[in-house]
Length: 461
Ligand code: URP
Ligand code: ZN
Ligand code: ZN
Ligand code: ZN
Image 1 (cartoon, rainbow, N blue to C red):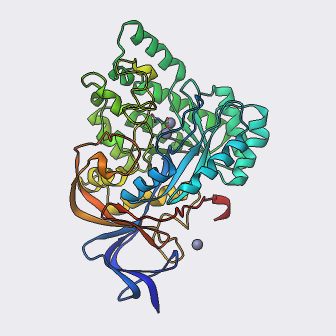
Image 2 (image 1 turned 180 degrees about the vertical axis):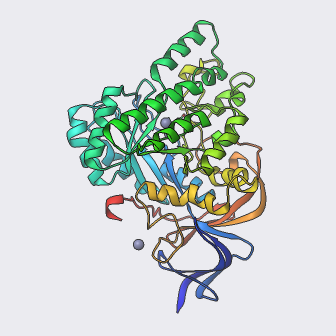
Image 3 (image 1 turned 30 degrees about the vertical axis):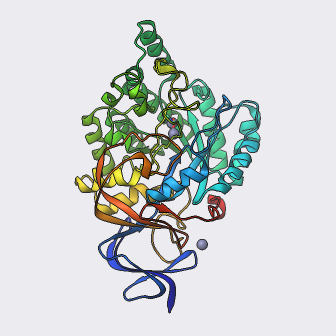
């Protein structure tokens, strides 16, 4: 048997196994793992790790906002950035806009994804619990292939009260889909923001102080209890610190179907990063905010215990400068009007590899589980995405574990004018990314060609 491509002599790493050998690829699929395989094209992987391409379960790409703006990173640029960082599938967000039926928005957003270079699935954000949304919208978008729903307990344009959350959880249960939730107490944050603004404390650092761990912990406890009441599966997004993870562990212990995701920023950034000269701190502003170094260390323990089992980027397409950027209202604007979120699609794997694997916090197999296999399972993309085995899509990253790189924004290929990780050095870097059997990134060069990303419908894989 001669395969189309053989990736020869690398260390093949999955969530469960590590073997030195060859991967045989035919067309878009992995066809074999073995020794001395023959291929029409041979890629030498000696000294490299051969891992499933990353599955990023939480990326805001070309997202439509209620104020009429659209996130700056498009499917074209964001998917290039994903490839540069070894990620081969994304789950992004269709946002429910005022006055627009849920199904219409889902189909509109799904069509934008045709410009993606890599495969994409979609979470549907639900911002209101009216009859049309509950009775028609939710069941229909799930049929059309939504990977799940996202709801918010904070943000003026998004937040749902407890009654509406219960309605959405019930509708999701009927439609048999996952609900992911942004847990922060809306009223408590509004109270704190008012207090800081009245005192003239408007700099970016007060963003962190206005969203302390207790507002996230309380909302996480409440969301977990609401899920308990309905017996509906719930994922808490972007868990920022151990005290929040502990609420989820308590929920799990009493049998609530609750799960947790976290993101690289909670391991490598800190709230003090927002405490810089002038407006510079806005570069690190996301919600929940990064916490303390002790919190970051404690989060690894929650990962090892399995309380947190998915790491996504929460990539957000806001530049620092420009009309849609963080400074859109000026560099002296109060923190409360600065858009939240930071870019992170390309840097997710390198940061978690460096902080997690190199520093002995997790094993290589746990790394693959956290960034690829577990998210693929959670969003219904497995067994097509998330591992290397016969029958899986040949979505593969070749990783040089010895390569040291100083991160600069110019190497990330996104449409955003900064990275919060500028100047940070990491060891371990993707040198080649294949999507469905095609080399789409080599040595930080993104291959030209028509976009071949396909919509991933978990109900029809
Ligand atoms: O600050 C953040 N995370 N912005 C993105 C939207 C969200 O909450 O996930
Ligand atoms: Zn969120
Ligand atoms: Zn997000
Ligand atoms: Zn297939």
